[in-house]
Image 1 (cartoon, rainbow, N blue to C red):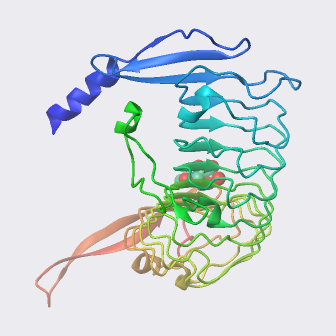
Image 2: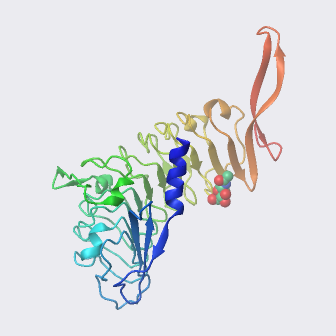
Image 3: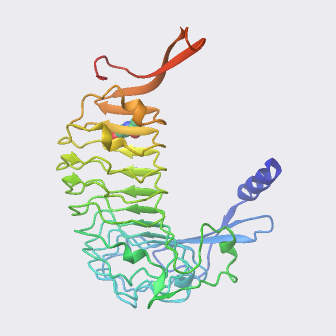
Length: 349
Ligand SMILES: *[C@@H]1O[C@H](CO)[C@@H](O)[C@H](O)[C@H]1NC(C)=O
């Protein structure tokens, strides 16, 4: 195992870059080679801010894997804007800050290896369920748009109802593969919907999400069952929601893998019932800083068996600690009591 790790490390360390022929004026192109015989390569093309009048598609080198087209005032994304030889091999595409109001259903359909899509800081109100279908997306950033609701059907890897089988045999990069790429299975692991106009937690049940960010949305109440069974979710951020007043009991119930829950910066959130924490068996970090919650029930630890630290107020940090063990005569052994101890007195009730 260690030898294998060393081998992988040596492969990574030997990475080097080279220039690219045929780089479009105004873009910056770079090929990164790695592997013992330079057997792997990534081609990164940076065409940020080419100027508003620049015509699309921008020609890019063959085998481009990473493309940054941010800040180009592209407007509505049409079927023709992302076409050409280099586009079909893209793994990562940045379309942020482009005044995109619409994504035509086939605008992205040729990008059949696309794992990482950044559409942040645009003016999207919706996405057609076909716009992302068939793409092996793992990470999608839709923050700073205008979604009022969000339909998870966009992540179904199906075209016309048929599962898409992606042929990976001709692409070396695919050998660093992740997850299950068979058709029909959504692969999305990370989704940001920060700073949209969502008034409710969108239904995302059944997606294999590990990271979800809903910060800064006009959500006033988080209802029971809101997160369904997002059983792979590790990190959930629900912060900066100035209108959030209520979190109903059992609303995090299915989140059995959740390690980090960020509820910071929610000033109207004043009380938390203990029943909110039902089912959060893996939770390690709870962030309530700058929220309306100023004290914690002392028996919280019983509900949160894995919690290590809780932040609240301004700079108050509480940690799970063991009280001095006492010899328990009946059990004939030393028992340890776990308590929350904070850097400020009077927080734990
Ligand atoms: C809690 O959230 C605040 C505000 O978002 C952030 O500054 C702080 O670093 C977080 N604390 C922890 C322990 O994650």
